[in-house]
Length: 215
Image (cartoon, rainbow, N blue to C red; front, side, top):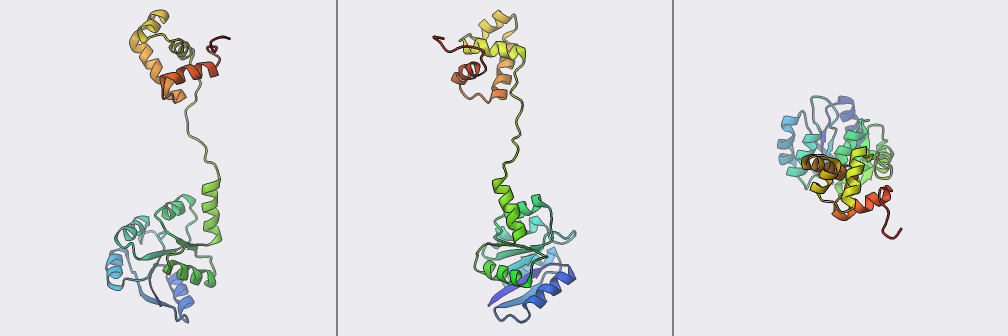
């Protein structure tokens, strides 16, 4: 039999889950967490096989409390039953290593399956959560990068660097100070993500600023 500690302060939800499990001989609700101050003490007292928790009720438990349970009681399996519709916070919870997560719109059968799966340390996600997971893993996120368009001066500096000019020689050629050339060099490295001296030449050829030798 799986001992379950219920951490949900919404009366209808708590009553509903309790009713769902009333006639089960393989699941036993051993207690209810009235507030976050009692959570650790009840976990220590009962050592449940499964903690059913909702983190999405203001003034009650939050994501940090789930994180704390994961850290302090790694042997306790957590089943999240929540009405949270925020994809970012749902992913934050899942990234804590939560293996079982269903919504409050799920059927009695799904909740029972989720509890059984959680008690064995197995994964169980309802369709809504699976959709979010799939979207996260298979939808490319827009890359956050700065434009790689160089200024006219930076283009001149890149050409001279690729041609083998030293900082001082570039400064003399463009009638600028070595410090200014160094600043332009750093800007070029940042914009083009250059990691080696050779890449100055490669990018200069790619941009058509210089031609490969022999052409």
